[in-house]
Amino acid sequence: MAALRVLLPRLRGPLRAPVRCPAWRPFASGGHSHQAASCGRPRRPGRWLLLPQCQDLWPTGRRVRVVKIPGVPSALRAGIGPVQQASRRTGDAGANFEYIIAEKRGKNNTVGLIQLNRPKALNALCDGLIEELNQALKTFEEDTAVGAIVLTGGDKAFAAGADIKEMQNLSFQDCYSNKFLKHWDRLTQIKKPVIAAVNGYAFGGGCELAMMCDIIYAGEKAQFAQPEILLGTIPGAGGTQRLTRAVGKSLAMEMVLTGDRISAQDAKQAGLVSKIFPVETLVEEAIQCAEKIASNSKIIVAMAKESVNAAFEMTLTEGSKLEKKLFYSTFATDDRKEGMTAFVEKRKANFKDQ
Image 1 (cartoon, helix red, strand yellow):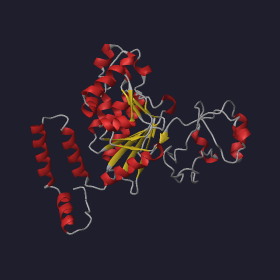
Image 2 (cartoon, one colour):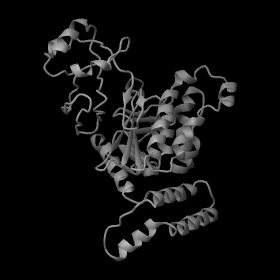
Image 3 (tube, rainbow, N blue to C red):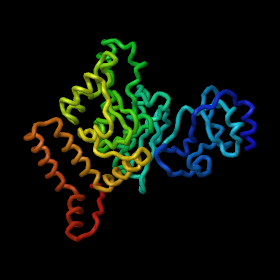
Image 4 (spheres, rainbow, N blue to C red):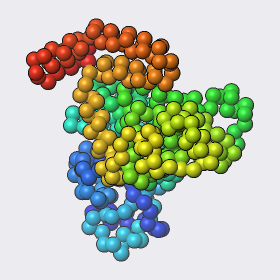
């Protein structure tokens, strides 16, 4: 508290929103707590701590928003304004991130969790965010301990769309020559299953990002839309293609031509979403599903994902041929032998991912 008292005279201005100590990586929808690795103190649920040990988190020139400091009277807290914020956070993905939070979750750390983290912009998908997302995806893809990935946003918005300010002044030559949005496709190239946990708005690029995932879980208040038509353009990251395959031509055409949004319940009925959960439990439910997937053989899971995705690219005859080839391929793996042997012996299989 001594260090805090030294800081307080320098803190002025209106109260702003919270900054997190990167050692905690808290979740809005999770009630769990983490031991602060750098600060040496446990996080108290529902509170943000401003610790003297974390003074290196606010370098000069950067702002941070702070709320609910234990031990500081509410009247004094109300007068605390911007202090200096670390613009980047370090996660389990092994890199410093500004726009996302990445960490391992699950009982055995078998799930890679990525949270889009631009709350002021409703997680608008700027170029920097997509680059960081791709970096985290690559790290989890290469991590042999991770068997599945969960992608989520905040309670208010999964992602409200692409960053329009970045697009506003682009020309046709800029888009065509630089293959604008090409790097968004990285998510579709990941071999490990990716589950989108969607709370709040999934509009435009946010809806397209969710549809790039293999499974979509939605919170009760989630909303999906492709409103590009209202901006004088059309979806450019797969919206017209994946949405049509997911919900059919009629509903997809209506959404694309009007910009109207649909609820989580309508999305589930149409086949866009597989399950709906309360907002506060959505992420944990997605993690549990990812853990279940990760408990299987990773090499067999990758084959199964490839086969299902082929159904969207091939005719029934071609897809069935690929399925047979992949099915035959499983007989070249140790895990196929282990799985069938365990079944016959009535025990749990011990897969080695080989």
